[in-house]
Image (cartoon, rainbow, N blue to C red; front, top):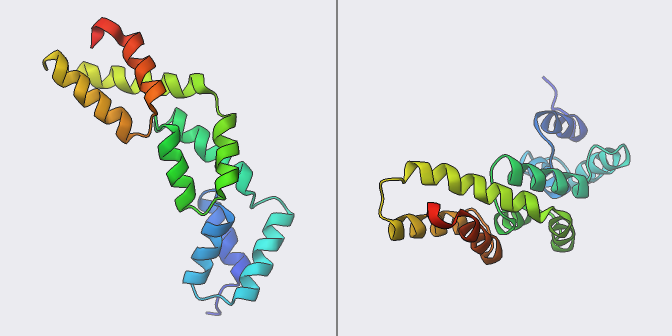
Length: 153
C-alpha cells in the first residue's frame, strides 16, 4: 500500500478533532513526512480555512470552561503545549466571558461540596481552594466563589 500524502494524513487527523497548525506540523513530522510536503499541506489547509489557530484556540478555551470547568491559567498552558502563539492566547483569553468562568468555578465547587458534606468546614475550604487552583482558576475567581458560597462552606 503506498504511503499516504501529508495532506491526506492531515485531513484524517482533522477529521477526528480540530487542531492547531503547530500540532498538525508536529504530528506530520513524527510520521516522517518531508518538510516541504508538510508546509504545502498546511498552506492548502489554511487557505481553505480548515486550519485556523485563532478559531481553534477560541473553541478550545470555550469548551474547557463550559465542559471541563477549567480556569484561564489551565487553558493558557494547554494552548501553549499545543503550539499556539502567546499573544494569540492572551487575546483569546481576554475575549472570554468572566461570568462563564465564575459559573464554571461555582458549579465545580457546588458539586464537590455535596461530596464533602461531612468534612469539617476548614478541611472543606482547604480542599476546595486546592481544587480550584489545580483547575486553573485565578485568585479573583476563587475569592468570588468563596464569597458567593458563604455559609455553605
